[in-house]
Length: 308
Length: 253
Image (tube, rainbow over the protein chains, first blue to last red):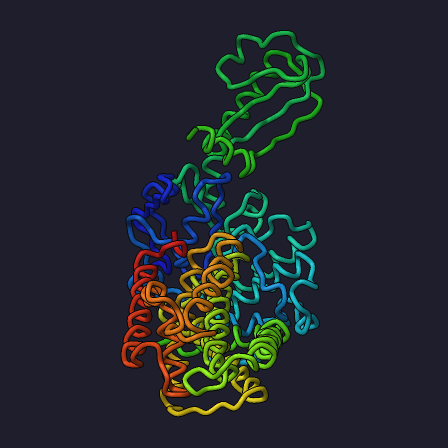
């Protein structure tokens, strides 16, 4: 199946000479949740803005549903909903009016029943006659999502959806995203929060310095890049590593009280047994052992640091 | 053509007018009434007729123009500037609407508001002075063309402005002097020859003169020239807007 979003060699140089994107290639499949991770100024928002039509690209091409976002903007933008990073709202408007406006401006005929359903889905129905300035930050963010969904988009862009949102609300947002995925909506979200990507994304892309460093299925990424660590709490502390352990990637920690063995997730399991055998042969005893897999955060930090 | 979007923007803007009724309608009506009381009734009663028209009646077209220009520029500029300022413009720019449709929505609403206020002032004026309209169709033509042209000018200012000060420069500092010196309160025949010549460089002279002609058939310049000049201003504004849309100036950069 053709990807729903196809980005080819996309570049953007702003008027002040800043190159925000340096030739990004990315394909997004229909129905998936893609998380774009990256530090501030990495180019995440610029990338989203070009796909949504907010910023003109300097070079390259973006296709949405097979249509060019510049030439066939009517078709592409009708398919897309955008939830911006900032809580930008018409403070003096009511929830109902602002969501109705969103549907109209996307070229759809007024449909009060649909607006009602969207507001109910986002627990905003009770607030429909309130003006936006009367709402809390979390409620305002829901209104922005309602606005983005009012025209029934097939693709939803969420730019930092849970920035500055408390833990409870963040969980609720994730539930909203999960429900949208069940409805078949393709979701692209940018985030600073690694746990967010880890929690809800199918695939993860890492952007830094205007380049897409990698895009991988989350599970494959964790498996491929995830380093594992075996930790042995020793019965007797050691001052130095015995020579017999030189073949293994081990080190001492906690003043010789613990032995750390680092290994890659794949293909090295057999070596653990050999290591344990070597320890027994050396008469080294341990009272406890634990393993830990590096998180997406570790992978991310490593990638970005390598790039820098 | 995305008519639903034009309708949505237009109705949204008109709703803003209803919400700020006091500021949008009552304030210009009050100001104009004060002009009539001071210039029309108090001072005007001591001024002799101009070209056979009482002074109060003579200044009516100029006062309507003054309000129409100020309101159209103010509404046209705030309509597009405010979403830029608050950031809500993202939604319109990411919607499947062409710039011409955005323009129709905003400028259509600003011109409508200007026309509504202009007609209210005409109604108000009729309480103070006797008004006759010799060429009602041409009066409407002048009114509509001026409203569209200056709402467009407002739209351009709204896109250009980076802060509220810049936004207010035209309606506060440029329009009033041009209107006062453009023959709103006098016929330029009353001026010394040098200032008569200078007045011809004032675009507002042509608007006021043509508009007044449609009421009383008296004019400082030939009404055909007035009409041609309004057409010229319209073309200038449309060209500027076309350039803004082509380049994405201050919108998509």
